[in-house]
Amino acid sequence: MKYPLLLATLLALPLSAQAERFVLESNALSNGKTLSQAQVFNGFGCHGDNQSPQLSWHGAPANTRSFAVTVYDPDAPTGSGWWHWTVFDLPADTQALAAGAGNPGGALPTGAHQGRTDFGTQGFGGACPPVGDKPHRYQFTVWALDVDKLGVDENASGAMVGFFLRAHALASTSITARYGR
Image 1 (cartoon, rainbow, N blue to C red):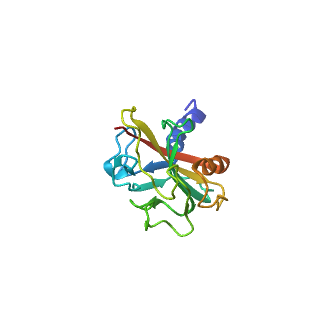
Image 2 (spheres, helix red, strand yellow):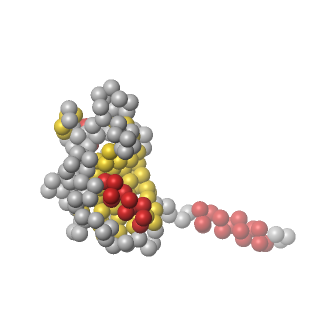
Image 3 (tube, one colour):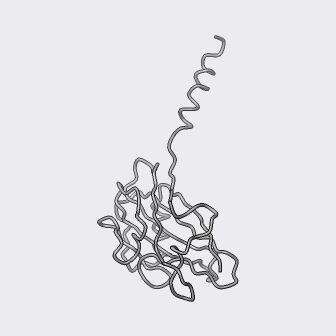
């Protein structure tokens, strides 16, 4: 054979292309699709179930020491978006959160904490854009972090949590769903 190095290179390509990537999945959310009533806030004129969705992920970097989950609306008419949920200090062996994990009495892994939403409370706060506004984007993101603990407490705002997440992110993966009324 004339080109053994070229052949070896071509044969190796499919193996490297199969490397796992960091992926977020949910049985309640799909990219670009409309949120269900389960993830709509119950208040501010909205009438939903205000339930955090089921989330699962795989393919995080091998050196991940903890995870965080955020839900952010960049379209909120505030000039700074709207934080709907922050969960941090999820142990590195966490692979999923059950539906309702972010609600009062929800089952979060031991050691995990929830910060304050822009509704002023801890836990999940569902979608509730202004009536007549274009449908908003809700970015559900899982962050793989290089620290065991993020270094903030439950009183931390979404912006504060976001600052520390970006400082310690190894990787992130998102699903962006929409909702309007």
